[in-house]
Image (cartoon, rainbow, N blue to C red; front, side, top):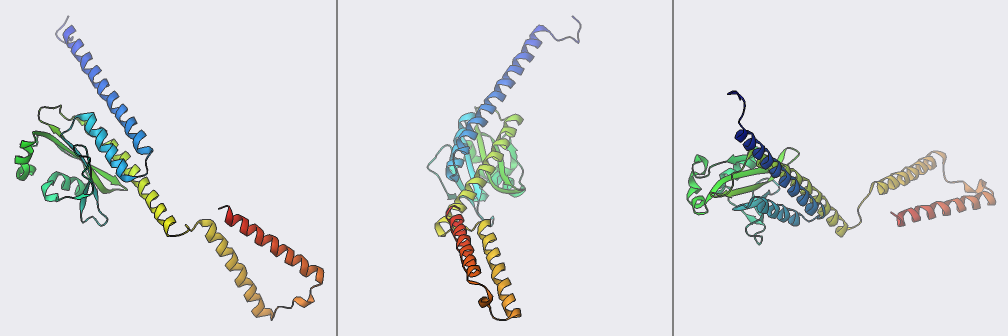
Length: 260
């Protein structure tokens, strides 16, 4: 064996490392499938965020997994789901206590802090983090059409496993799925609100209204140019046929409206 050739021990070690990486990827894929199954079956945004927080917390054994959403206008941020305390919902947070969260939301970029105890950006909260034995912090923004609408914050224990680049990428995938699920839930809530306020205007309604308006204005314009209606020139059979056609047309319109 030459000096450049790997030893048997090195080959075994490389193989074990590859097997561990494959097992890690398998767990990520299973977690994604489970998250998809849960959020795809719900159109309630609270159910969506609670499912995602719970699944991520269980997958990594986290100290904290919290989901925050930005209020309309971007003035305030609310904690809407928490893995460690599912009872916490819809709580307004002070972003000065979460500089890493503030940075992720404002920049729209993932913030990864491998060692919270020594990071200068967390100087003001390092005492609290030390008491919680926090090791690393990852904040992944939830974005929609280029804007951050929220974020997922994940914290690992100091004696727990380290967060790898693959883990961060996995969380970014989950954040993307969360954004789509929240958008669907938002559309569903808006549709329910419209229905509770009254009938939802459809394109078919607008088409029918435009057609009837066109016919009415056409007849009014013809009458103004040609003079008063002169139906007396029509024979009795013609007038009856016109009445019959009008009745048929009105029946068809009524039937279409009933089956919308």
